[in-house]
Every structure is written in structure tokens, then in C-alpha cells.
Length: 103
Image 1 (cartoon, rainbow, N blue to C red):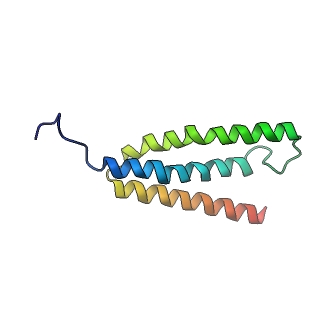
Image 2: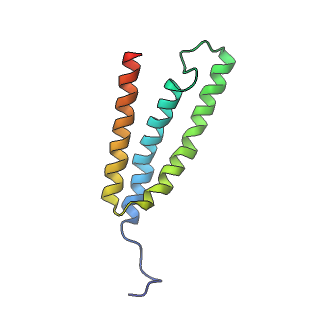
């Protein structure tokens, strides 16, 4: 088979992992930054500061998601990409839930 006509293996499963699991991971990661970053959302913020902060964090999801999506093609297999991204997502959501219940 010619190298020009050969399709890279696992590209579909890696792409879907980056889109679906990477999207969940970006929400979980930005959620950690929102709640436990500087000033959090429970600080003494005025309504305009709170609006600015929530808008900034909302728009931060897209670049984080695209970074994760682009990095999924560094995994050897699609199964490995799915496993690592879903594990990282579970850890981030568990950390967020645990910290929110304690703090």
C-alpha cells in the first residue's frame, strides 16, 4: 500500500475521544479554575465583576477543549486516548465535588 493513500490508524476513535471526552474534561478543568481559582465565585465580587468572571471562564472552555483535542492525536491508540481522557475527567469532577463539599 502506498504511503500517500494510507490512512492513519485510530484517527476516528482519537477524534471522537477528543471531541466527547475532551469536551467533558475541559468543562471539568475550567470548573476547577472557576471555583478554586483566585477569588472563586463565592468571594466578595460585585455583580459586574461576577459577570466578567463568568463570561471569561465560559469563553475559556473553547481554547482548553481545542488544546485537549489536538493532544489526543499523540496517543498510540484510540482506546488509550479514551481511557486517559475519561480517567482525567473523572478525577477532575471528583476533585471538584470533594473540594466543594469540604470548602
